[in-house]
Length: 98
Image (tube, rainbow, N blue to C red; front, top):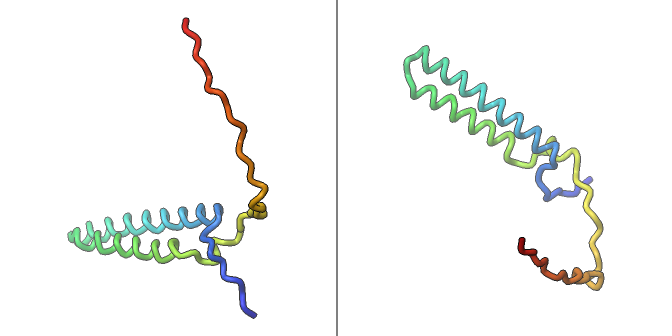
């Protein structure tokens, strides 16, 4: 009955979806705010409508909602601590003079 809580945020496709949603809401709220502010001749309303869009997009895109975690990343298994090896030392390259 209990579901494992995923502590990892969005996957790559979820990030792309969140970015599209964010840009769409910002664009629509900016256009709507500009038109409403122009009609009412109140720049204040333009800012209010735009900031409402920013708050709405933040609410929809910042938390790791399940719709953004549908394609989890496949992690490699952990290696044992003794399996770590130092990379081979390299000699510095010498530059030839021309």
